[in-house]
Length: 241
Image (cartoon, rainbow, N blue to C red; front, side, top):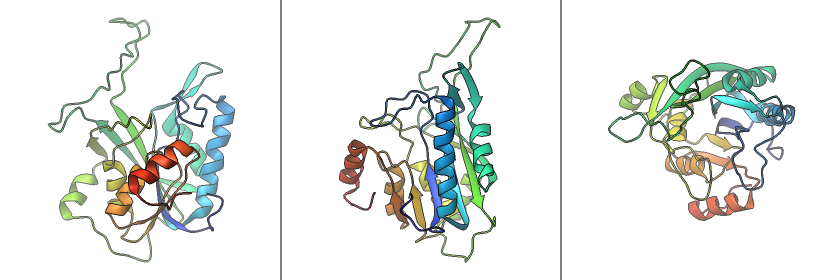
């Protein structure tokens, strides 16, 4: 990210590490809380500088952030919004991704068994059916100059509801992928054809795959050689760095 010029990016779509001890290649997802907070402050503040005035950020996150040292959970929405606003981002939307089990509309529980105290008020724990997608903008809420949109009337009517029913995705090479439908919708709502989209945590390349389909320009960053190779092989291109 530091190699980009300032004011370059139109839209960032990403899902950063949640600090919940997922076994990534080349990254520790079980940082001390203050270290994780500093990590998030670093990339969110740098991203702000690299984004155009009127540019947007779509941030898919977990429901909670884990403070392992104090055995405490924090609201991820509060955590990320506080950091983003500290460095200049303006909050504009909270979309709830409701995970589906199948295309017929059955709710997906993810196979989780976080019941806590079974059938007792002692210490119940709720299972997660959803994840937030937080949307921010830099400076003006209006994107100018006006470009060419490619969203249809039907898509606009359906996707501007703040609850998205989307099936999760799985990938044997990467432990935490999000479905292509998330960046696809975000691009059509928040960007124009030919805009520059950025993904700071490229992973398996889902966002970049959607960029190619929707005729957006893109830049991706990835620290893992394993994920980098997988994404470039999958997408048959070499524009990641």
